[in-house]
Length: 464
Ligand code: ARG
Image (cartoon, rainbow, N blue to C red):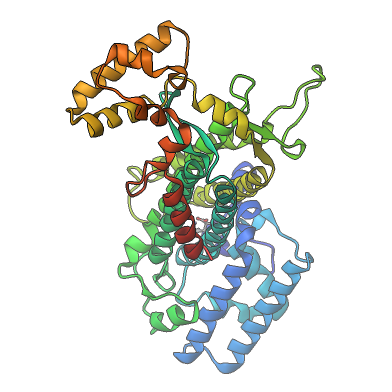
């Protein structure tokens, strides 16, 4: 609490006893919200300038307040500021210090505002720049994936459904699937920025204020588009917090899915990729081990971002209007999700720079599991003018035969094939070629090398 000269809380004229020390301790949020100091001071400066413009305070007072606020900002940046948990939060800490620096005139600063609108203003400003930072990092991530994809346009691997080899695919195309996911994430964060454009400052505690304030003026100063429209909703609303936590969760899912795929591909059973020593850790007992810990970290941390989203959803459910202490937890959840996502993106970038696909193994593996069966069925449809279902049956027979002989489709002779279906001719053997298979998937969005090249070009333009 801000205390007056007699070291009593500012509300000591009304509340006669000191708050219980246990609650003072746990109810204080300064360790978390001191991260908002810059936004808090910027918003205070805009508020003070507005108070002058509206002739609510004098020029002299305005200068004094702004001088004091800038001095505090400097002290915090230079780590000379002493945060006091008895003063509850960042707003009270700054106000208290302002009293110390400029004396009783500091008391003008809280004219026509409340901590309730102050905290959301700070928080929205913080979220704006932090969302932009995530967008920037996602863009870096996209660039790295595109680089990897470009190097692997013609690298053939098996595509999977149900984790069973399905059809041959370009590894570049596979990576571009993640480009789509992270592009959607970027868009989701960009959309959130739109929702952060309304200025809460000036709704005061919950009903607005009788001072002749100008909320359009502070909106402009703080680069908001317009003031919020309902004072009660403004101090109660944390939808923008949910939006952020949800966006982080979805992005974490994408990171986690990629991490899981890399863990599988790096396993001794698959051996499709190799992780460079920079992104593995060892075992304390098994000298031979190189474990994909950073990938597991990414997968594991996803749970943390879901937890933060769920905490906030639960805090808001059934909470009456308007401000309640419950809401104070929003910042800890958001800061935690932000830090975690930023670290995860940075780690993922490192991983994508430090792995090598085993192209030979990928190719061989793509030829396991009769992966060109669909190509064969398609060929029969095209060359013999048969319905797809009929071609499917003929193909099944051929696959059954190859399986019983323990050979691959491209090891079948035309003689063997003709025995099963006399209509077939020599030409058919080319459909078992993996490269031909991939090249033939020219439909829009498909895996043909040609398509992948075009898509990389398009994505590159978008992520400049
Ligand atoms: N530290 C508080 C929070 O983060 C600021 C708002 C306090 N308002 C109040 N009426 N107690 O929520």
